[in-house]
Image (tube, rainbow, N blue to C red; front, side, top):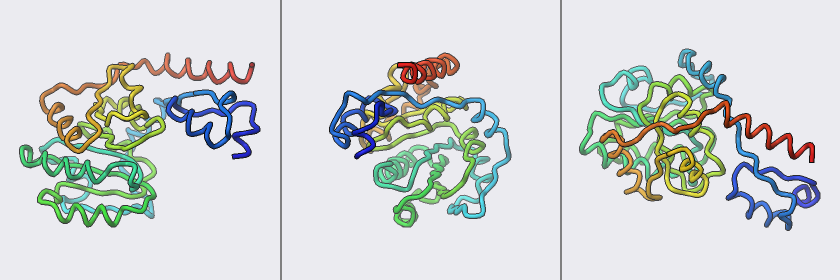
Length: 238
């Protein structure tokens, strides 16, 4: 609170974070929006590496090891985020379970870091008809080789700051659908694919993907990064 109040410039990654940040520092005149860069060259390099689990990686799946899952004939959907309530994993899982009624060969891969809902998520998938089509992974430092081999990235969050993983998926030519929330609406500037902020919306987005209506974003990342860097240096020079 004191730092936000006394700093000459406070940078947030999206417009929707200006108001809550100003509420903490009790001022808004020093707040500036600087979006996340996309380190696309590192993403591409990491995606070419072999899939490697870390010592503390936890993997849970009844569909086989991750190589078996990725080699199955159906479509592979993926999400990456914490096992936390704001990430909307429960509604994604329930939507996917409904989706499998029409496409029973589909697979869902959920990769998460820290969070309090891992055990609850395991319990949920074990209670569903198509829970065997869902693989969970917790604590992997390089998920890019897995992401690269998937067909669709889904962001089911209730709120986000910027959602940099959207750009990571797009860099690897993986189409993205995301719930229509403040932290994802920037995608519309690049012809992105937003769905209704609900379980039904996520389900409809998956069906739209199967119809061929979901595509990658239209972003020139060199131009995008140059603009962000220019904005940052303009703050320093000001």
